[in-house]
Length: 352
Ligand SMILES: *[C@@H]1O[C@H](CO)[C@@H](O)[C@H](O)[C@H]1NC(C)=O
Ligand SMILES: *[C@@H]1O[C@H](CO)[C@@H](O)[C@H](O)[C@H]1NC(C)=O
Image 1 (cartoon, rainbow, N blue to C red):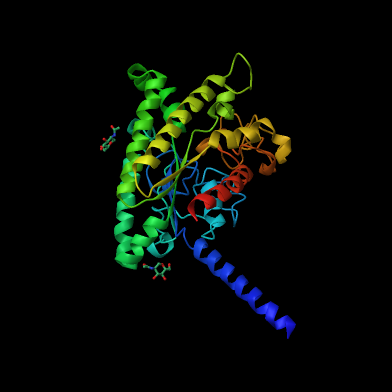
Image 2 (tube, helix red, strand yellow):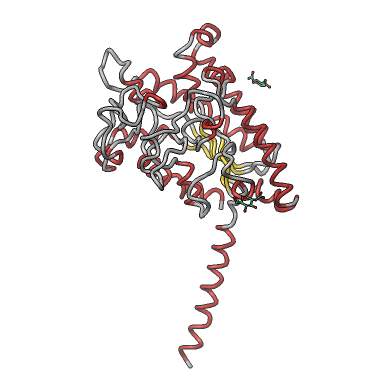
C-alpha cells in the first residue's frame, strides 16, 4: 500500500516529463539548407557545371559506399544536424528527381557547390546563385502547401531549422583568383559587400516565414590544404592573411546577426562559428584522434577537389577518419561529425 502511494505520483511525474520532452522535440519540423559545397547534398549533379563530384572515391564512407554529389567521403554537417534533431539522417537535394515533396517535407537542400553570396562567384563555374536558391525555396513552399494544406505548411516553414553555409568561394574562387572584384573593392569593402548580401538574404527568407536560422561564418580558409601549398614563405603552414580575412568577415557577420535578432520579431539567428570549431581540430588534431591536417586524404591532398579527386588517384589514403580534410578543401566525414556534435546541443538549447 505504501508503495502504491509513492509510485503513482512518481509515474505521473515521469509521464509529464515525457510529454514535455516529446512536445519540445517536435519543434524543429524540418531542416532546410542553403549554401555551397560545405552543405550541397547533390544539386550540382543535375546542372551543367564542372563543379561536381559524383564519382568515386567521393562517398566511399557514405551508407552504401556510393557517391552522392556531396564533396566528402561521407555525410555532411547538415546531415548530422538533421539526424541530431531526430529527422532524416541525410538531407535530400531539391533537384534530385529520386525525391519528391513527401521526402522534402522534413528536409531539403538547395545548396550548390562553388556558389557564393556574390552573383559573380556563381558565374565562375556556372552554378546556382544564392538568389536562385531562394527562388527554389519559394517553389518548394508552393509544392508543400499543395501537399500539406496551408496550416500544416505554415507550421513546417516556421518551425524548420534553416542552415546557411556559404561565403568561402567568394574569396578563394572569386576575389583572390580573378581580377574583377579586386579592381572594384578592397578586401574590407568586399567583406562589407558580402555581409550586405547576407543581411538581405536573411531578411528575405524571414519575410517568407523562416524563423530559426543557423548562419555559418567563414572557416579558417587559410588552413585549407589548397591554401597551404601557396604559402611560399612558410611552406605548408596556414596562410595567415586568409585567416585574418575570415576573422574580419566573421566579426562583421556576427554584428549583423545581433542586429537582425533585434530588428526582426520572432527571428532567432544562431551564428555558427565554423572558424573556432574547425581551428580546434587543426591545432589539436591528436586530441580528436586525427593524424593528418596539412593535406587531404584524396590524391596528394594538396590541390585535388571535384573531378581532380578521381577513383584511382595515386596516394589516396586508406582511412579518411585519420584526416581532418577529405580533399584539398573539404572536411572529412569525421570532422563533420565532430563539428555537428558540438553544434547540435547549442542549436537545441536555442530552438527547442
Ligand atoms: C513520392 O514518391 C513515393 C515513392 O517514390 C510515392 O509513393 C509517393 O506517392 C510520391 N508522393 C508524391 C506526393 O508525389
Ligand atoms: C544578383 O542577381 C539577382 C538576379 O539577377 C539580382 O536580383 C540581385 O540584385 C543581384 N545581387 C546583387 C548584389 O547584385
